Length: 110
Image 1: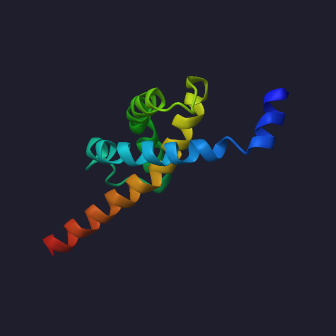
Image 2 (image 1 turned 90 degrees about the horizontal axis):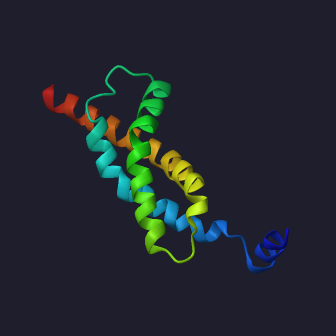
């Protein structure tokens, strides 16, 4: 209860975590794209989202551990929430990037 009151008075702790979530998603993007490249052909959007989520989790978890270890403002207790949020931020980026790559490849072949 006291922690909630203090966080209300000092500002929302989410504002400290948001840049970290963004950083983790950005740092994970290339590796996740490399992992799923060419494997989402023929998948619906829902299937692709689930596939990327499953493949990205370990990578995002690793990046989160590294980022939290370097950060003085974030506790390991919030790691699961950070991993979830960073993964959810990463999924549309990966799908967009893979779609653009497939679209450009079909243009070159034509």
